[in-house]
Length: 205
Image (tube, rainbow, N blue to C red; front, side, top):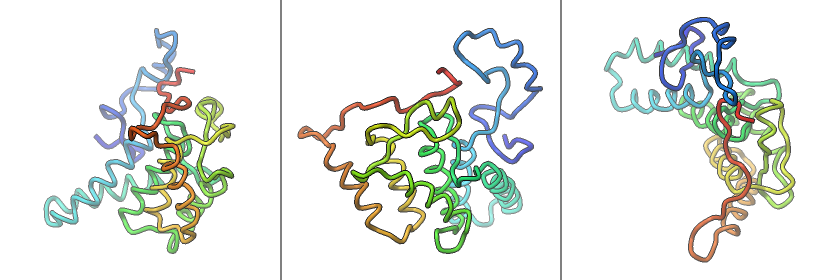
């Protein structure tokens, strides 16, 4: 299932040329004719295999290690110059960066021992809003650059906070402010209200 670039797709190995996209019959979906590697899928595989080898270190160890090595290379290559990762299902850089931080933490990287890891944490912290939350608009998916929402979003915050927690970000106040916003948005019946758009896929903008 692993692609030549080391990443993983959503349902099968990448096959065929991207020129197939010229034959796309859909009016609202893009990049659907062939499979691609995605940050979310690739990081999920890395996290899973890292946990698996802790419990079954002798099972196909060479293959597991080779797969981890290749997917790590893909994830590191996919990191953008500002330290973030592009997410294809959720909105957008908050989502992708959360997955990447979680997976890299599973192989021992942290804010204290990795410059690239540190840069990704700093990216998230720079986007924290005055009320302690994070807010990213769906236009970020289209423009492929961060687009700040006018209001913090519970879902974006709920991605950023665990990302920083798994990264062992040293300033606990950053995390505490995010958690406080999530608590304050909870309704008396226990739910959180729907806010802005949370996900976009197949470039349906």
